[in-house]
Amino acid sequence: MLARVKFAQKNQAAAMRETDAAMAYYTEAIDIHPGHQASLEGQRIALKLKGQFDEALARAEWAAEFVGPSAKQYLVLAAELEERGRLDAALLRYRQAVALEPRNAEAQKAFAVFLLSHENEEAAVYHLQQAYQADPADTWVVDELAKRRALPTLTAQQEGS
Image (cartoon, rainbow, N blue to C red; front, side):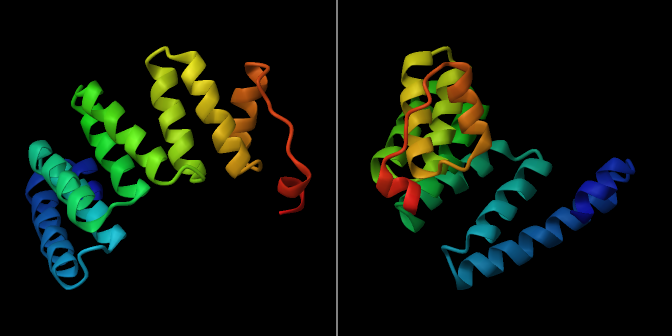
């Protein structure tokens, strides 16, 4: 956060110093607890601030392989791949995320967003419906399904939970 402030103030030297300090803390935290999600995320953000995009992708790939498997790790990797235009690889990681945790509303929603942005409406609606089944309180999902007249009805069991 301090690095972003320094970048906004156009103080590159201070921003890089803060980014390097953050990297040291994140690296130490990951060495102690390799699966610490906030540190993994912070480390990737710091790498991107430094312009080390390939290294950020490599860290996401490492986390997906060695920290996971979890939908969260695959979603992070999918987003990194998507940012770099590697859409086939991103699609695979989104699929892995929802296959690993099919009741994970965030995974279903993220996959639906990806599909919508790449004009695969039919598949996106399916994943929006899966997200809705997992979390009917997500207003964005409800709105997207309503726009498409694809809002499913909840079962009695889902309404009570």
